[in-house]
Image 1: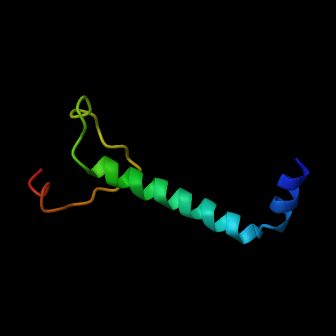
Image 2 (image 1 turned 180 degrees about the vertical axis):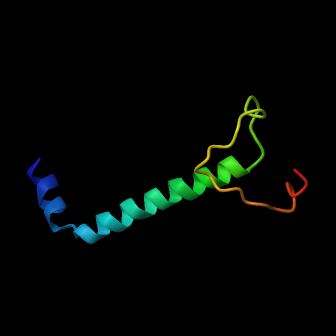
Length: 63
């Protein structure tokens, strides 16, 4: 247990901040991409949440 605290004490805080911000960005961008993709089975008639922006592409420009 002391080894864990010794290694964690030397780990820079900004490294953790970069990983946390990167993870949040990846989840946000992934969620937007998923909502703008074709709907999975069972989700065809579901409405898009208001917080997700509409992204137009060649495939869904006629919708």
